[in-house]
Structures are given as C-alpha cells and as structure tokens.
Length: 162
Image (spheres, rainbow, N blue to C red):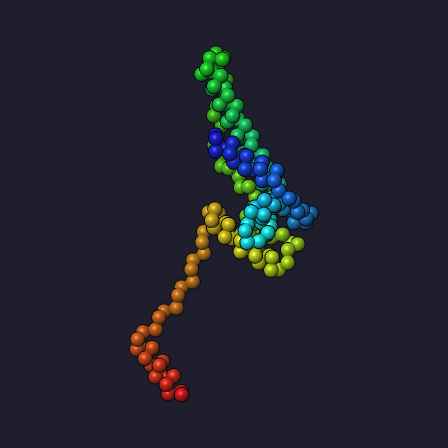
C-alpha cells in the first residue's frame, strides 16, 4: 500500500511540476523544467506524452490506492477498539502501477527540428533501456580477426604493390 501511495505521489508531482506543450493532432506533451535545469551539460527538455487511456489508468490506480487506505483505516479502527463493528471491506485486488507517461520513443514532439527529434529518440531509448521498458538491442557481431597466415599474405601483397 505504501508503494501505491508513493507511486500516486510521483504521478501527482509529474503534473504539478511540469510545463505543457500541446498539439491537438498529436496529443498532450509535458516536460519537467527542473530536470532540464539540473543537467550540468545543457538545458534540454525531455518531452513526455500523455493520452486519455493512460490518464484513465492513472485515475483507476488512484482509486485503488484510496480503497487500500480505506481498508487500512477500517482495520485500524477495529483493532484499536474505536469501533466494534467490522468495516466489511475486503482488501482490494492488487493493481499494477501505471506508467507515468507513454514510452517517449513512440511519441516524438512534432515541433522539434530533425536533429532534436534524433536526439529525443536516442535519449528516449536510453531511458527505456534503463527502466526496463525495452531490452538492449543485441550488439553487432564483430568482424573475425584475420589469421596470421592471412596477415602475412596481405603484408606480402602490399609489399609487391610498392
């Protein structure tokens, strides 16, 4: 329950401490100016996308957290002797916390320049890897090293060309 309350606080703080950039066709984007200001190397916005289905998930998670708190309050009153009547509320079915925002690699703000869009996608993919939303892509296989015989033959060819 405490984790649910903390997640709700992160959701709330995200909206309370942000700047919005909305485009009717592309949805609602937000950025946290404090995050941009805290970076020592540059003042770069990290735009995040929000849509109605995600807002619905977040609202339902808030309601789930509220039910958890109501259950806890009823149990406290019963166990502390403040009431002799059981509250009758079952513990709510556990819910998976919703994302704070949609995956940023899938929602690139349309007002960015082409360079900024490439930078946005690179940073978004790195962030998604770091939080576990996406697995790291496999590394490209390295070219096989030439054998010592191949190196000798190549050296001989270069010598003949001179």
